Image 1 (cartoon, rainbow, N blue to C red):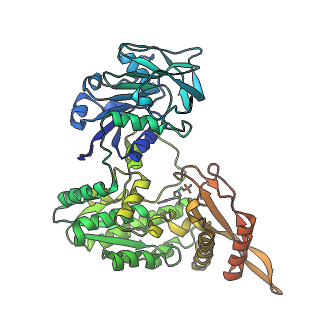
Image 2: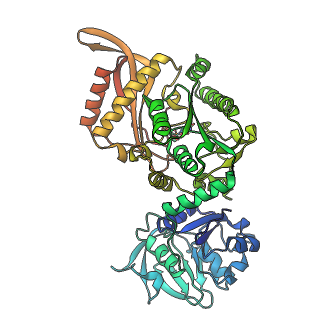
Image 3: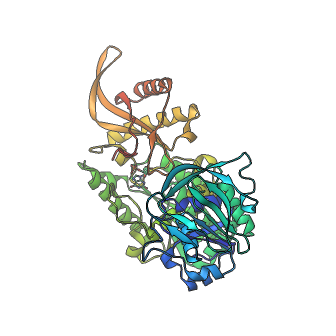
Length: 519
Ligand code: XMP
């Protein structure tokens, strides 16, 4: 658990697929919240956490099943407002003396319309134009509300769509106000945190100040090392730590020779020259490309890069005296993922390149100043720290770099061609004002040569694929619907300006079934 000086809201997770969205909605309201699985929320935990309000998430179980999840009974005696959502509503009613039924006719999935009933501050600013669309997803339903509760909203299949015990500030809804398909659901959260007396003091300015003090206290006069990738997370982490401890931070930028055109110079230039950070540019191109020579299997390539990265980082870190801490740009979704009670083992599609193995191997303690943030909060913090917008808004770039955009064997010639083509493609996207609409765009060089005719001569050059996707989190993605004009103009530029490419294709695969990268 993290100690912050903000008002804190506790989300007790009963395993809903969308619990993270509740946290997102609250953070948007400048409310600090944490998600904890119900099993971890004991009476002692509640005392330590001292929430100003509590939300019970939805969940897949049925309260009518013996042994199904419950809230700790002490939570109802803390005198703090509670909001129960879906399973959270049912668990609340059940534990407070109401009735929940399952079986035929109790399920409801999808769109429904709630009609308001009576006056209640939780309904404020909502239902201004009549019934509101909400999203239902429940097997059971509440058939009898607990003592003290009144009904404030009904839907055709949920007579207790919105209920409240105003004297205790307990609220319960059957639908999911956090999802997109409850278009004005954010209002409910807004009203709830207002009723709970939150100051809305969770801002990036306040966070920056707090974190700087915290990092100073944690690190003292010791040194910190950081693997700077040039991505938003590690960059913001480095900038924040630098603000706290200045020269006690050394960043190592591992250049594996698989970066985009001018990338190394841009990243090192920005951090070293503009931000005065101590950056070691570890140019290990020869080592990486040497080991990758002749390798064409995607997983082998990834494993080689991952292992070499750790070796190289360790080599440079060993030269930094008194380094006791390793900085990492771990984000809140990674933290939730690792504690989620519902997360089961899943199939490995790709072995991701990260520096996860480093702390154990090197015996270093971790500094993770972004552990409490979502991605868009990291971007806001980066802006707050003075990182340029053009840098903050950059598309994600994978750890293994161009290696996974060069299916089959990697050669220096192919990398050079790829860099040139990629630079033109991104230039085109920027010129057409499309960069910020796209999650990620890049060129992949294909392991085939094709015959072409240029001028009056025959060419026998590589084919490339352009890829551009829209996505929210990289987990699912759709291809970007460029106009034919854009595609034609871009293909012409690439073929004319890049020596070595004579054919361009556009990849229209979504994820799933494809992945975003080609390997
Ligand atoms: P895929 O290709 O799996 O990619 O659909 C999803 C997102 O993750 C990025 N990616 C990586 N990022 N190390 C990273 O740091 C990796 O090994 C890695 N592999 C893929 C990819 O660029 C996309 O944004």
